[in-house]
Structure formats: C-alpha cells, structure tokens
Image (cartoon, rainbow over all chains, first blue to last red):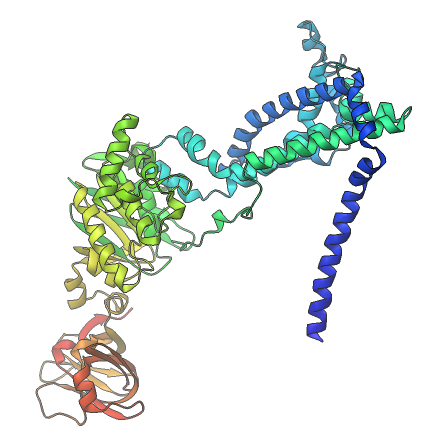
Length: 279
Length: 352
C-alpha cells in the first residue's frame, strides 16, 4: 500500500512538472512555429520594429542601472539592520508587485502628471515627464525594482552574520565589508533579482501605455509595438513577439551566467543556518 | 597592563554579571552551553551591546557605560577566533589574512604571507578559503586573528569538535598565537579538559556568573560548588555531614551508606571524590583507608593503561584504576567489589 502510494506520488510529481513545462512553453514555441524565418527577418526589417527594440533596450538598461545602484544598497540596509517600522517599509516596497498595471499607470500619472503631486514643481523646472522616454524608464523602475530589492534582501540576509562580525573585529570599515565581501557573497542572489527585474522591465506594458503612451521611436517599446501591430497585421506581430522572446531569453541567459545563477545553487538562507551554540 | 572586564547585562534567561581582571597569560572561562560565555567575548570585542559595564585594556576604555564610551569593534585591538572560524569563503587564504592587516597593499600582502608561514600554511596562500580542510582553515583563521597585531586574543571554543590527533596540533598552534600577542588571552570552552590543556587559569561560569577562579589544580583541590567539582571530573554525592568523635566528618548518604572525610562539615553537603583516588579491592581492607564501601560493578571501560569502573554504592561513583589491576580483580558487571579511599580524598563542598 505504502509502496504503491510512494510510486503514485512520484508519478504525480513528474506529471505536474511535465504539465507545467508544456503549458508554459507551448505559447512560446507556437510563436516560432507560426512565424516562419521569413516573417522573423521581415519583422526585423521594419523600421517600427527596430525603433521599438531600441526603445526597449535603452529604457531597460537605464532602468536596470537605477534599480541596481539604488535598490541594492537599500536591500542591504533592510537585510542587515533592524529599525522600527522595518516590516512596514518592506511591505511598502513590495506593494507594486501586487498592483495591477493599470493602477501603476494611473498612480504614476497622479504623481508625475501635469496635475499630479509633483507636476507643479516639475513644470516650474520646465520638465514634463508623461509621454517621454523618461516616463518609460520610470514605469519600468516602478514595476521592476521591488522584484530586485526583495531578492537582494534575501541574498544579503543569507550571508553569515558571523563573517560581518569577523570583518569588524579585523578593523575593516562597513564600506569595505559591503564592497569586498557582502556584494560578492550575495552575487548569485543579486543576479537572480536582476534577472527578474530585467524580465519584468522588458515586458512592461500597461503602465507604460498609460503613462508614456506609444510613440514610435520615443516611448513605443516592443510589447507596445506588438499590441499596435497585432490589430492590423497578425503575422508581423508574431515576428515582433519572436524578437522579444529571443532578446529576453538572451538577456536572461547572460545575466544568469554573469551572476553565477546557473549551476548548483544554494538555497537562500543556507549560509545563515550554520549551526552554532546559543551562548 | 591587562584587561579588566565588568559586565552587568540581562541575557534572555538570566543576567550576565562578571567583574574580572586578566593581567597576562591565558584565562579560560569554562561553563555549560548557554552559560553566557560567548556573550562575554562578544561584549569585550564590541560585537554585542552591554547594558552596563566597562571593558578597559591597558588603561584604555573600550567600553564604559557610565561615561558613555562604547567604541566600535574596529577600534578595539582584539584578535578573535570564532568557533566556526568565519573565514571569508570567497577569498584566498592570503586575502583572508590580509583583511585585518593595516598599511599599503604591498605591506599587507607581505605581512599576511609571513603570518601564513608562521602557521605552516604559506603554500596554501592562493587557495580559496572554502577549499581548505578543517585544520588548514583553523591555521588561516589564527593567522588572520593576528593580522592587526591585537593586544588581546579571544578564542571561542578553540578545540571544539577536534579528534585526539588534531587536538595536539591545535594546542601547539594556539600556543603560537598566544605567544604572538602582547596582552592576555581569554578563551571560552564547555570542556574543562580544553581549559587544562590551554589555560594558566580557569574561571568557571554558571548562569552568567563566575563561580570560581583559580588554577586547574586549585579548582580540583577545593571546588567551590558541586558544579565545579563535577566539571573538574570528580564524583559528587550529596549527604548529611556530622562530626565524629575522632574529629573526622561522617557523611551519611540517602541510601544509608556512610563516607568519611577529613574536611570539617555539618548538615547538607556535597562530597566530591576524584575517580583516580578510589581504589578497588575484592574484600573490605584492613588498611589505613577510612572509606571502604561495598559496591556493585555497573560498567568497565578500558582506555589503554587506565580503566574506568562504574560503581553503585548504591549512589553512582566512578573509579579509575590501572588496567593491570582491573585484570587482576577480574571485574564483572553485576559483581561485588569494595571501593576504598582515604578520608582526605573526600572533599566536602557546601550543598547548593
């Protein structure tokens, strides 16, 4: 009986994984089977495709630079210090993850729009953000940064706190510890966070459409270009879709390879779980 | 010269209250797990906050809560050997040691190499710390602890989890580290044997307090409590003491068995007898030893030339005799034997 159950359970696990893989891969594979090589090359030749690709890559690169340079130290602070209201801060940072894109778009407009909270001071400086390439970057940062911060926080928290203490007793500054030890030790986790954020940035659609519009060559990213082409030319949209899959997949692979995220990975929290006597 | 440590701070289960001075040499703080030993080291190093107290080294206050002084760990010149060694796993042995060395990059690498060589690990300088064996990691950690030329050496369970063969090597290496430091060494361990092997002086810690401090010999000769007596390896039994007409003290155990001690005592006491002071005989002796107690053998364990024999009188005792004697006595579990020792070997300790 118990052996039969064990076998059934093992089978169920395999079936579940197969079903997950099949369902998640099917649409991706379908894009490539529906759009032949001709369509793919043809779609690349279209000027709006090249513009969209450029806008997507440039905006995502700037967004990632902002997320990594600001989000990483912020995550380090959250992971290593305890302060009143810490849980509240963490929840607030995670909030955009669960917000619908439409809410994100309207929120960004309410904050940076001409009649928004910061609209007045911005326009007095001669700045108007909506419908600009800055708006694309802001939308990407808003929806993606929480993914990186959350992952980075877990990665820093998994670094054995004893090592930091050792560094302190050896006279090293906190800055030296952060740059020479905490960062390298957290790199796999940071890479995973950056990958998630990058994927989310490249796929950003709803908030960008509402906040930045869909101006070819300025704010029209690849997802927006797909949406606009799809209403008139399904085959061309397929080609753009294939392009986005290829670009995203290549970036994902690159970031994972750079961050050491591929290969045997330790589960988060492993290093912190080192057994130690309580005294 | 010297380090003085006064701490009064609540820990989760009890308050840590110590007031000790360590002038030179090696002092071991010995106590059971959870006695607050590691907290003492952490507070000296500045890794853990003390509610109230002072840590003064060579007249320099590292901590003085009355004067609002609490220097960060970076400015306290300690060499800290962590229980799990805490090497930076992503750095080479050399980079680990150089981490604490002040000066230019060139000076740091030269000094780190010198330290690694002192511990016989110069050849491993380029190897990543997470690729080193346990013994190599300990040597690198010791070299690293000396990197900033510390004035005080703090060792947390430095012999923890070592087998007998590596233990001897580790003791020598720790001696090298101790000699390299100008000031005193403070180590914590739960094992009295570690303290005997490493320290000049032992401070026994129980529930956040130092209950007795002295050389290992002094602690064995006159333990201040039952805890200290059992820590140093003596048998401890409780009983009721009364003065005998001949001036000695009789201790009646709850089973009715009576022991004789040369120590004065009255009322509830703990009698402490070292296993090696107990001799075994087939029959009651007519000799000079005043204690001759009928016992049952409960276990026999031979380790080379020495044999430890578990006894029931019916209170549990352990006797340690030579293996030659044990063979001659033909000890069998469950068999009768007489445990014999002098009245002076029964040390009386106040109960509690």
